[in-house]
Length: 422
Image (tube, rainbow, N blue to C red; front, side, top):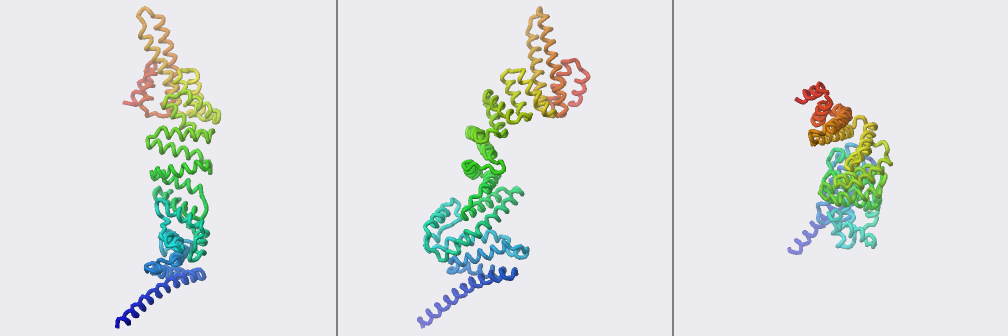
C-alpha cells in the first residue's frame, strides 16, 4: 500500500508541475497571438497565465518564466491601444522587475542566480556586469541579448518620460526615482545618458537628497557636461547645496572652479562677487567686476555692484559714475537710485555734523559746511524721488525723502510725503 501511495504522490506532483509548465507555454502563446492579432484579450489571458506560473516554487525559478512575463508587460506598455494599456497601470515596474529577474536566473551559476540587480548600494549590479565580461554559461543567451540590447533602452525611455511628468508636477522624489531607474537601465544597455544624469541630479536636489545630487553633479562636472549651456549651472547647484549645509568654504570653492571652467559666465561671476563682498575682499571684488563689465557692458547690476565697491574704497567719483551708469541702463533700478541718493545724503549729513563741531567764532567755515551740505542734499533729491517712484510704499525711502525736502527747504513736499505714511 505504501508503494502505491508514493507513486500516487509522485503523480500528483508531476501533474502539478506539468500544469505550471503549461501556464508558461500558454503565456508565451498568448503573447504571440497578441502580436499577430493586436487583441487585448490575448494579453489579459497571458497576464493571468504567467502570474500563476510565478507563484509556483519550480516555475518561478526559471528564466523563461520571467522573460515571457517581461515580454507580455512590455507589449502592454508599447501598445497604442488604451484598452491594452489599462490592463495593468503598473506594467512598467512589473516589466522591469521581470526582465531583471530573468537576467540573473538565466545564469547557470547558482551564486549568480542570487543577485539582486535592484539592490540599493549597486554592489550586485557591479557583480552582474563583471560576470558578463567572463561570458558565463546561460540557459538561453538570446534572453540576455534581447533584454539588454532591445528591451532595456525602451524601458529607460519610459521611465525618463514618467520622471519628466512627475518633475513638472513637483513630485521631485518620484521624479528622482524614475530618472534613477532610467539611468540604471541605460547603463545596463551600454549607454551613458548625460542629460538623464543631469535630470537625476536636479530632481535629487529638489527632493533635498543632497548626497545623491552632489555625487551626480560631481560626475557631470568631471565629464565637462554643458548640454544647452548647463555647465555653469552644475557649479551653481553645488554652491547652493553647500550653502544650505553651511559649508561656505566648499561653496566658494565650487564657484571659483566654475569661474575657471566658464570665465565668461556672469552668473558665476556675480556669485563669486557676493562672496568677496561678504568677506570684505574689495580688491578681488573689483577685479571680478571689471571682468564682468568687459564681458557684458550693458549689465546694470554689475555697474551698481562696482559702485558699492568703489564706495567701500572711498572712491567717490567712480562710485557716483557707476551708479549713474546703472540708472542710465535701467531707469527703474531702485537699488542704484537709492544708493546714489543715499551717498549724497550721507555726504551732506557728514558735513552738517562737522559744522556742528565748530566753535561759535568759526562762522565762515560753518556757513561753508552748511552750503556744501545743501548742495549734496539737492543732488540727492532727484535720485531718492526716483527711488520713491519705483517703491512708493517703502518707509525708509519715504523717510529719507522727507529729510531731504526739509534740508532743502521744500516743506510742503515734506508734509505731503509725511501724510502718506501717517
